[in-house]
Image (cartoon, rainbow over all chains, first blue to last red; front, side, top):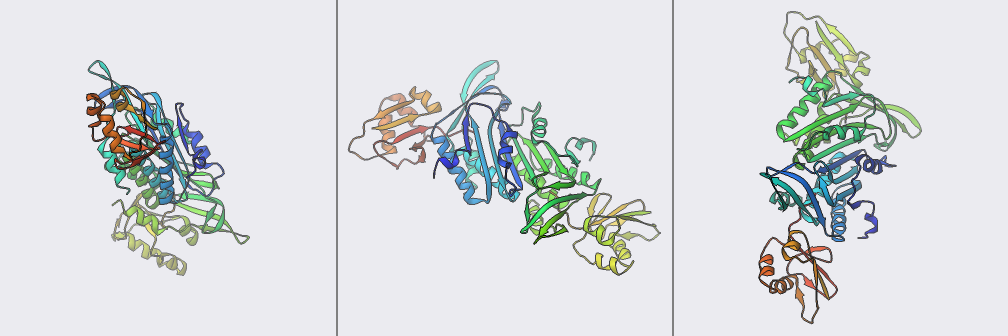
Length: 160
Length: 160
Length: 83
Length: 83
C-alpha cells in the first residue's frame, strides 16, 4: 500500500470543501462511469435534545490517512468502482457546516451506493476522529466528548 | 396524494441541472438533517461494446410525474427522511451529459442511502422513460431502443 | 370514448402514437382492448403478441384484468429504461 | 524507546498527550504497556480501567496481545466518533 496512490483520494483539512468542485474532479475525463454517489455530513443543531453551538474535531495525524486508505482499498476490492474521494474536516465547526464528504463513481449504480455507504460505515468506527460538542443545556454551556454509538459498530459489522 | 405537494420534488426537463444548486436547496434552512446523499447518472460512452454517440429520452407526460410522486411517497413511508428531489432529463443527450439526479436528506445517513437507492431502483422499473441510442457498430450508425434489464427488475423486487 | 396511447418502440412498430375507441355498453378489460387492437391487422397482432408489454390506465400501471371505463386513458408501452 | 500518544477524552483525563517509555530487553505487549501506565498512579489506573479504550501501533488498530518493539508508536484513545 503506497500512500502516494491515495494522495488525491483523501483529504484531512480544516478548510471547508465544495461539493461541486469535488464532483467535477470525480467526473472529469471519466466517461466510463455512468454513476456517481455522494454523501455529505453536516453539523446538526441538536444532539440528545441539547442545543449544539459548536463542534470541535480532533484526529490522529498519520493514522487518519492510513486508516482511510485501508478503507478505500477494501471498498475497491469488494466493488467495481472507479474514483473515490474522502474529505474529513478537523478543528472547530459550527451548525450547518460540512464535516465529511465521500464521493464514489462506478459503471453501475449499485456498486457506487454500496461502496459509499461502506466507506462511511467504516470511517465511523475505524478512522481516528473524535468530536467534542459545546452544548447549551438548560441555559448552561458545557463541553462534552461525544460517545461512540453502538449502532455504528453494529452497522459496520454488517459488512463483514 | 396531491400533485401540488410534489411540485418542488420532481422535475422532468430537457435542460441540464446543476448539482450544487440542487444540494443548496435541499440543505437550505435545514439544520435538522445532518446527512445528504446524492445520485447522479450520466450518459456513458459504451453499451454492450458499441460506441454510443447520442441518447434520446422519451417519456409519458403526466404518468411520469405521477409515478415518481408515488415512489417518493413510498420512500417517505419506509424511511425517516427529510427532503427529496428527483430530476430526470428528456430529449437528446450526449456522452457525459447528466440524465438523472436523486437527492435525499435525513437525520441519519442510513435512511438517506437506502431511500436514495430505493428511489433509483423503482424509477428504473416503474417510471415511464425510454432510451433510444444512436450507436456506431463496426462503422455503421444505427438507432436502437434500449432493452430493459432483468437485473433492474430483480433489484427493485428486493425492496418488496 | 377511450383514449389509447403508445410509446417508444411500440409506437414506432405500430407507427401510431394514439387512437380513440368508442366506448360501447360492454365492460372491457385492458386485455379486451389489447385483443381488439391485435385484431386490426397482421402487424398489430404481431406487435401485441409481445408478452413483455406494459399497460397503464390513467397514469397508473395496471394488469390485463383492469376494467376500463369511458373517459379513461389507456397506455401500452415496452418495459421502461430510464434512469 | 517507545513513543506513546493519547487522544481526545483520554488525553484530557490523563492531562497528557504523549510520553516515552525506555525499551528494555523484556518483550512487551500492548496490554503490558497499559498495565505499566496504570501503575503510575490512581488517576491513570482509573482511566485505563475503561474497557472500551482502543489501541493502535504504528497507525494500525491492534488488540492487547500485539507485541511492541523499540521505535514503535503506541496510541491509546476512546472509541472514535468522526463522520
